[in-house]
Length: 186
Image 1 (cartoon, rainbow, N blue to C red):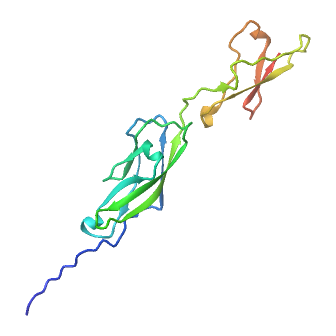
Image 2 (tube, one colour; image 1 turned 90 degrees about the vertical axis):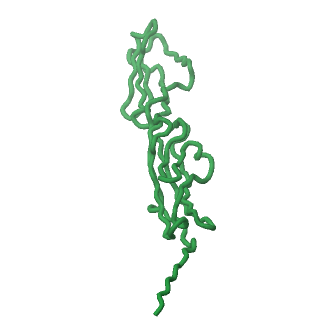
Image 3 (cartoon, rainbow, N blue to C red; image 1 turned 180 degrees about the horizontal axis):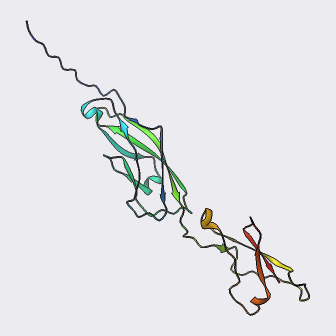
């Protein structure tokens, strides 16, 4: 009797598959360059080099904002972020095997930029001129003030106050509940 050993060589016939259909994460807009955002992961059912996966970012544009470790799949910030410029990034991530020919899989990664209170509120104009008749009764509306803050949520709430001026004691500001405007009263 003779023993025969047969080795079956793996053919690269399986593309890498991500463990999730999509990935999402968030990072603060004041995060330092190099901050870890999230990790993606894929598997390849082939053996040997055919089943070893490396990661890369695909597409263009938002790829500049992030880098990916090709071995671990960890996505990190690559530059300073600004939520007021770009609030969310959608990136294509790739998992590429080392077989011949190389096979790959892709997945959508969404990264939301969390707001910090880094933008001051501002008026549409540096100067606002309002008029009121000199015999107007006390409590008369002189005009409406409206400032905008490009931040979001509580960071975008604007507080109004009179900080000085020759006749500042003659006026008051009233902000109605739910309004982002203030009424100037005489």
